[in-house]
Image (cartoon, rainbow over all chains, first blue to last red; front, side, top):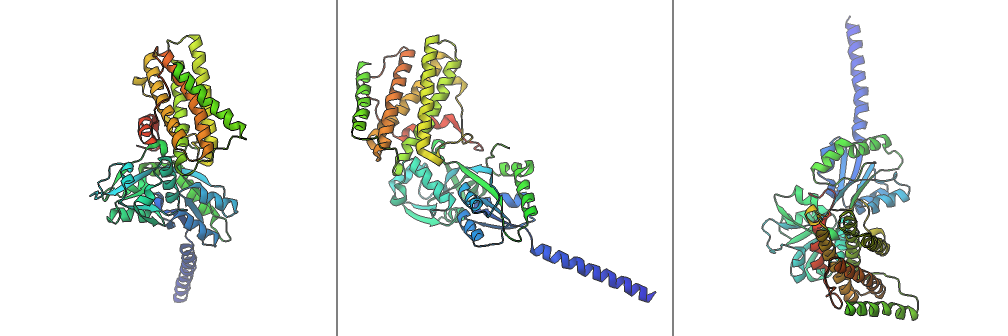
Amino acid sequence: MTTSFLRRTGLIVACAAVLAGLAAPSAALALNVYAAASLRDAFPAITNAVRYSFAGSNQLQLQIEHGAPADVFASASPKEAQALFHEGLCTRPVTFATNFLVLLVPKSNPGHLTSVYDLRAGGHRLAVGAPGVPIGDYTRQLLARLRLGAILSRNTVSQEPNVTGIVSKVALGSADAGFAYYTDGRSASDRVSSIRLPRWAQPPVRYQICAVRRSGADTAGAQNFIQRVTTRAGRNILKRLGFGLPPRG
Amino acid sequence: MHRLLVTLVALAGLVPAAAAHGAPPAATPVGDDVGFVQYGAIAERLGVAADTQALRTPGFTAAQRRELSAARAAKLRAAHRLDAVLGADAPQPGDFTIVLPAAQTRTRADVLALATRLERLLCGVYTSATAYAQDPGTRMLLARLLASDAADLAQLHRLAGLRPSAGLIEPIDVDTAGPAIDPYLKTPGSP
């Protein structure tokens, strides 16, 4: 009986060890989602059961091109996701959300800014995305459409590698204003105010998502994640957080 | 009316004169020139929406409806020409929707007043572009569109029983014209 008990106990321990052994690598192999910094609130609200890396889309694209262990890539403009697709590094990207630009100012508004046209006078500290970063490219596109390209030389401009840097600079008062996405202004509304920018000049901000193609990628997990983002529940969360939604189909 | 026509003929005359010196330069906006092109691409679409609304409104004769249809078709062609200049940055279906308030389009007079206001803004921006756009090809394209839209404006004045404005429309910067068209645009997802 004692022997039988020991055998049974041993079997249970062995099984537990095997299960633990299976569980440990699966935790280590959690799905890696590389996503644009402006999705840092939205994606964890959709699921927390994956590992996220949030940064500028262009940086993430570069990391994936250099073999980073990403399974999913979500970019703030089609350029980066489409580039990976054309390089054979991800599946055909789908547009899953839209956004638009606002001008953020600190709650105290030390620059006394009420309109983007106030920046024409110069002398303000401005945080903008660096060229090549989606928010930086969208900002330059918007300013050219407004015929305000010169404000980047009339004000003291800090070039940020992603939208998080812009929001931080404005929230901390290190910048009098910064160009960011509407959803960023919403999520930091306790520290910053958003000034609307003309609709006619807004560049179309489209987010795209794809499953990364690499040896060892969790393709099924990636497709499952993309489905969560693009189906009704995911879209509802995105909408609640202020994103626009492309037509389904 | 005559002064306006003379101006338009003179303006249109510039185009063949330039073409005689060689192929007209392609529009390749430089720097902030794109602001004029973008404004035009959006405002021409607004004009199409206003003409469409006019065609749904009672009170126009068959001949007037034909004129409005022709003007609408010309505006759509203009929008496509501007889209071609904007390339990948051109407005796509779904980027925004045009909403003309019912209160401004109830009667023939309402819809003509709205269409006239939009057309005057567009002509003003094109006039500004002919003076301030840096790229000669962009200036040339927008001058051609100004000629066409100024004719549409004269037509709208005639339909409304007004005297067409004399001479060329005063230039209007996009700073002024942009906020005037913004209320008619809705961005998906925008609160």
